Length: 593
Ligand SMILES: Nc1ncnc2c1ncn2[C@@H]1O[C@H](COP(=O)(O)OP(=O)(O)OP(=O)(O)O)[C@@H](O)[C@H]1O
Image (cartoon, rainbow, N blue to C red; front, side, top):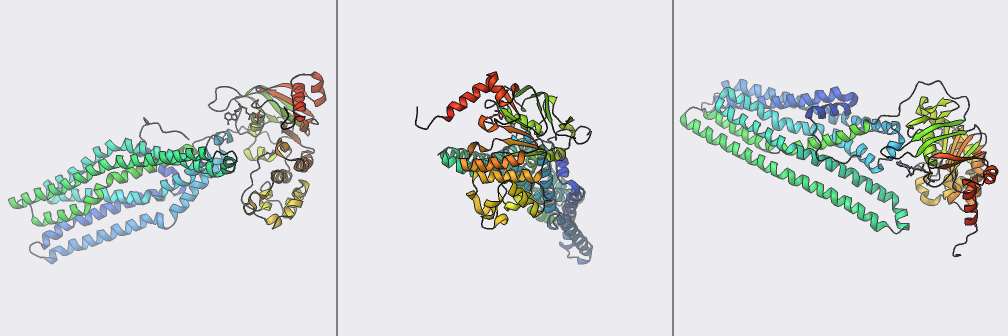
């Protein structure tokens, strides 16, 4: 995700309000009403406290309870109203709206993850996405009412009292009102720094979250390569960075808070001094001064911490920014659909493609015809663009020029579901979810019956090893951990493809990392899978694709040779040289020079 730009403009509060209402989704009107309710409750509370002035006037020194009674009743009524409105407003939190809203927002972000181009998603670190979905969503919605309540009580209640005080004694009213304009320059002075600080904090959280996830997931590899220390250092560096940002945040908050607390103390002193002076002169009712002193003491504390609350608004704003940025990523456009293809040949026509932000094109005028129900193999040096070709077929991204039709239908006119339904993918790296084996296979076609799942597993040569597991098909992948071998995991992946029964199969050379026995099993499963389908296989070991119907040799993003194995050998070109190089490697033995 984006790194913070220190010069970045501070989002206006209006924009924060808009983002907040957007993230409240269907509950925006209720949230808006709750926030307005909290403001009204604070004003009612201010009016209730203002009643202290006439109440004291009636009681001091004449103790006229009859004159005091209406004010006592008004105060009780206003206090009651304030409490009821506040309870109603906060009902958004305690009646579960907030939790449901948080859940909806997370679901929407989850749906957005499914919509955004995979190529964009691949650029984001898993931990970063996790930080947005969990942390930012919580930061945004869970604190909002609490903080709004605090701010309303800290600002609106004293402001109401100050305005009411004008009525009883304009000089004291003005003194009270003077305190509020002082808050504004203080807030404006600190806000850019807080805003930046909170954005940096959000970025630091995201980075640390990504590093922790990567460290935990990569531990087996790190241990095997003895590089735990190096990665641990990186993680440690992230944690230190996070600590630094938090410390800076605390330090930045200390000064304005101290200043504000001092201003509030001085304001209290000013009210007491001026009040005493006016009372001594006989121009101020002692009862009004007594009431004002109670009020000032009551509000000094929340006002003093106002700037601290303002910091949380910036935290919310930073979180809203992250959520907005994720929601703003556009899915790939879809053209008008002429319907589903009638057959499943694949063409790449003049395809130019560069990854986002990369200057050089990976595919440069790539054109190829992959006949239906035939196996086409992509071979070529590492980095030549083989995987990129398959990614474009699966529409992880769109080419900058050229197009890719399946059976003559441009894949850009198929919906993601239609396109995904046409293609099965089997990679070396098989991701198994922490669920039962049955569910892991069934995910390829959720409506498949148990019998159909088992038939696919048999066809992919999985049934035997699955029935040997402690609970057969009901064994949870998490419970058996690393007990499944690479070949077994790959056969589960092939079973998924069997069950999906899509007409096109993309295979990343599977057998490269397997021992001979597993290789034979996986190869048999593949042979069963690819029958009668349009198959693209990315091959590193040429021996595995010698029988392909067509071999496309790719170099620097275009097809430089194509044909069958024998033809290409006879042509004595690039393929023949690659073949010879691999044949000679085959005869090497470890330790021989
Ligand atoms: N998401 C990405 N962003 C930027 N560049 C990328 C991305 N994915 C791949 N590349 C670059 O594109 C080029 C082609 O990569 P690709 O994976 O298609 O090659 P390949 O022929 O499949 O390589 P290999 O045989 O090593 O798997 C490489 O230089 C690679 O670094």
